[in-house]
Image (cartoon, rainbow, N blue to C red; front, side, top):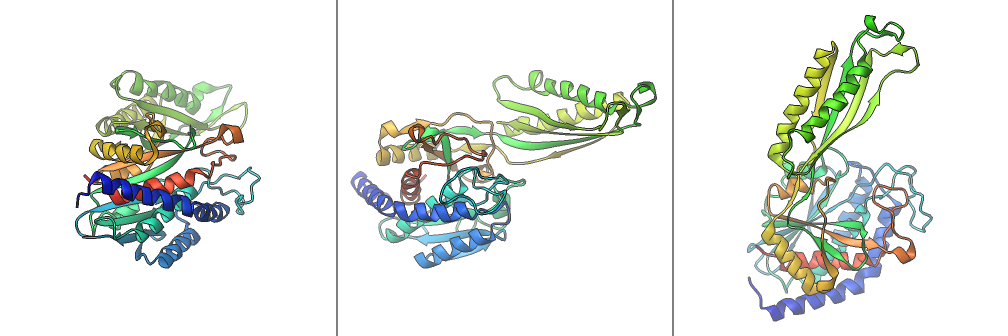
Length: 402
């Protein structure tokens, strides 16, 4: 199964040549996907497009989680190892403001997080890997996943439906566009990469009444204010200072005029952590503080913590292999370290089950004004990044091994 350094370099060069050759084709694929975005768990046309593309490439596939697609490419000795490559397919409920030929044709829906890029890169890598399948060993699972943007995360449904079985991948790779990283660069990080993300929903109820007679009411807004302040001790006095974590209450909704104390107030927020043990300890602290404060002030309370994506953890050995391949493919000056991020990604479901490597490709081009962040109405990429995205995915599929 092992190949010599000379053979590895020769295969890298072939992949690089093919990535350059197919770059224009997969820019066009990206344009089609960008112009026709679909929201989480509604990726029916995108799924059909992916399946048709795989069919033309002669790659067999199955459908999981309604709109998910899993292709399988077999190389030499297909049972000797299996590597999974993952791309997400869903878009966001954002109205696009870019004036480009491939602008979204669907009002209020936009590929503002680069999933059209991810899908295009994996389709391009699939074409290369299929053409070179006699030159690498093992098998490769191509995972086109729905619903990354919406709890509980499409990855959880793909795993539920068996994406990590028959064959069982030894490792999984996922890429993400990085609008703060210059095009032509890639970045990696070992260990903790991204945070878990849980949603907090609180409903407070009490006797409302005239604002001039607060003694005859339960002031739900005052209760809400005390809860916001009290929750900060979860982070400031309970968290290990060496462990990154965030708790933010982002919405308080209650009342509609100046002289009425409302009988109901709703609150929302997010909790993020880098450690799974601390994560669930914090849930209990949040529950105790919210319920204790509300009851002490005479209010009824309902608390729901919607458990979301787990932390993204990059296996150290797999990270080293990926970084080494990236340096061989792109050159050491093109490979950087990814910063620790409190954002979340449902790739964490995979990396909690099997060794994973979640890496980023640069898409920023300041000279061309391509600088907008993800989840904004002006997000776009320097499309020369697609060539790198295709090539890196193909490299990891063909050559990564633990």
